Length: 316
Image 1: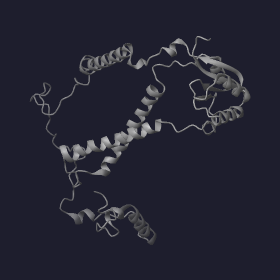
Image 2 (image 1 turned 30 degrees about the horizontal axis):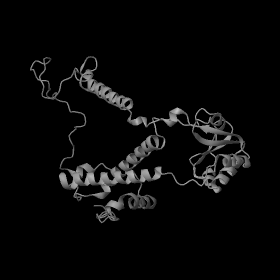
Image 3 (image 1 turned 90 degrees about the vertical axis):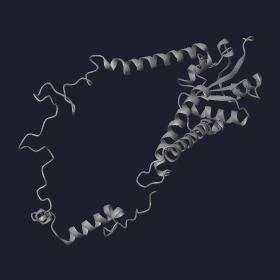
Image 4 (image 1 turned 60 degrees about the horizontal axis):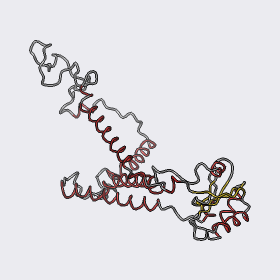
């Protein structure tokens, strides 16, 4: 193995307490480039390893704030500069109306940027090769064992000292992990011509299929059934009726649904003559009505129905 490049030394432990203790001692010893692998998350491991906060949070913060600012400036330009419209007497720059859009753009931009950064910067996809893949160590720590891997890139790494250190922690099966040719000679595949060509081919196929479906297929039988219906549109001719008009005059003696003439037009006294209050007039009903009015009606109409509401002047 002397012709291979060393990646790390690994050690196997049997219990969660042992791996927590090993992580604490490794951090206290001054190692920086090491990792712990367990078959399931262990509470307290972050504190034992003294891990700093993830940098993904800063990506989400910067991109999210940038998205919110971009949304605000875009709406300001459209509403107050390029095409100002008076809506309900509100000012052109109405910030409360912009908040929902800013929120949505913030969440959308931050989430997408976080996922893409995680996949293509931290995980280095589509390159997924790693020296620990296909090792006996990884098979065990993904099943029922716990392991720690100290990388050779660490400033304090010394091969013999690391083996003694792991043995002192009680590690079993202390083994060396080496790079293979794929990891040594790898290049970021996201810029390879084959991958870029795949993206271009996908874009062309997606665009072509979308254009064909939206501009051709939907106009072919039987997909055009919504365009050719057995109906008459307003102001169109007809070959069914003798007069040639598609629209029909109202049938004598009939009234369209929902258009019954008001019986008491100009006669308010006659309209209220037969009206009765379905609720009995009592102290309880009066107090209940006042309570309901004060709760649901007074915010807009005021306590006495004079329009002096508590919400008056509260919104731009």
